[in-house]
Amino acid sequence: MNSDIVVDMLQKGFRVTLGATTSLIEVLQDPEKRQENLAKLSQEWSQLSEDWAAKGFQTEQEARSFVDSLVSQQPSSTTAASPPSGTTAPTAPPDVQLELQELTAQIAAIRAELERLRNQDSSSQ
Image 1: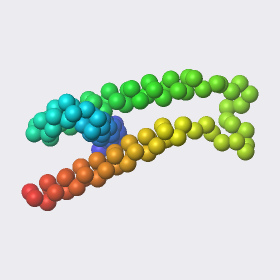
Image 2 (image 1 turned 120 degrees about the horizontal axis):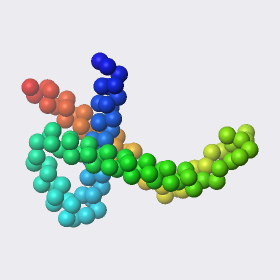
Image 3 (image 1 turned 30 degrees about the vertical axis):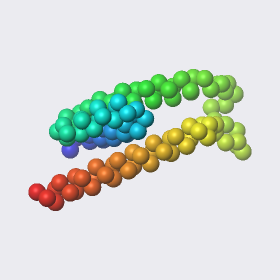
Image 4 (image 1 turned 90 degrees about the horizontal axis):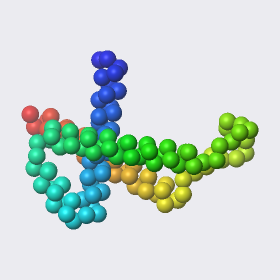
C-alpha cells in the first residue's frame, strides 16, 4: 500500500471517530439533536461514516484554531527556545485537562465499539 493511502485512511478514521464523538456529545446535550441523530442511525453505515467524517473535519479545524489561538496568546520567550532545566512546560487548566481526558475516553470507547461491530459483521458473513 502506498503510504499516502494509509495516512489518508488513518486521517479519515480519526475524523469519523471525532465526528461520531461530536454527534454523541450533541445527543447528550440537546434533546432536538438527539431525535435528529437517532433518526440518522437508520441510514446506511457508509453515509453515516461520510457524515461523521465531515463533522470530524469541521471539529478538527475548530480544535486547531482553538489551539493556535492559545499558542498565539502564550508569551514568547526571546532568550531560549526551550524552558530552562528544572521548570515544567505550561499545562492546560484543570477543567480543560479533564474535558480532554473525557473526550479521549469517549473516542477510545467509540473505537472499541466500532471494532467490535466490524468483527461482529465479518464473523456473521
